[in-house]
Length: 64
Image (cartoon, rainbow, N blue to C red):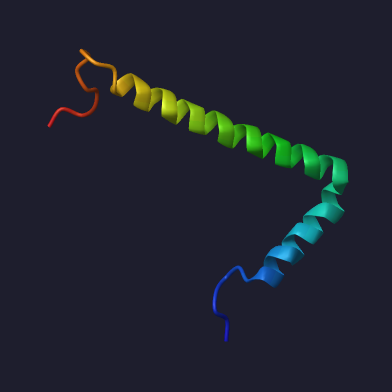
C-alpha cells in the first residue's frame, strides 16, 4: 500500500498546513532561523576539524 512514510503529496500537505497555521512571515522567519542554525553547525564542525589538523598538535579524542 504505502511505499514510504513521506511521499511528495504528504510533504506538500504538511507544508501547506504549516503555511496556514503560521502565515507567510512566520514561515519565512522559521526558514531563515533553520538556515542559520545549519550554517552555524557546519562552521562549528569545520572549525573543530581544522583545529584537529593543526601541525605539531597531538590529536584529540578518546584514548584507547
